Length: 276
Image (tube, rainbow, N blue to C red):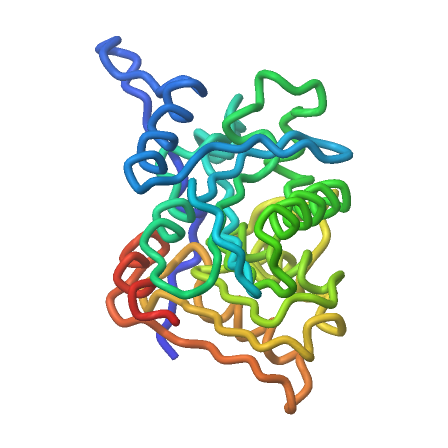
């Protein structure tokens, strides 16, 4: 196993205030960029209301009914702009899970689901910073995501689910799957599957208001799992997924695949094209 440097996740965005020329795109600009990606692929935008949040989704314009629906769940997005300063808007600058969803070639019906407060944060009273920092995997986040997935499943007319999550979206996918009986496969890309081990690794504060996927393994042991990890990922290195996998019974169908030369953000589009 390769040794990994213990460092804070490389989510930090450097803003060049001195020049006054660099600025972060607004929520609407980020939404417009994601919408264009989706529309160029023949997908449409949906806003799904849940008990706690309104969630942004994208689905193909032609909603062909299918027995299985694959839902791609977004990562943490722009949760922080420095080690100590949370972002005011977690909407991703680079929506990795959306790009994975659009590139996924399968007979399954496919949908994309953003995280709470992404793309819509300024329109919701509940969208306080804790929901993309300490409470990013909270009970209410998991309930809201589960409700949105059920709504997508009804739209498609599917009977079973494959949940796919990138980075923190992997934690969401695992926690949602552990509470359902209709998930046949769980797939993660650079997934954060043991939040306690992750915060200890990076010497950062525990996610005090969040659930830990590693504590939910009893609800996952009957689900087929594939966990892709980048060989050079210093954000969620293999040891995080391995610590999660060790908690599963030996009979569990859970596979860890190390992707050579990949890191936390590169090169998952190449991998998704090989996933069936």
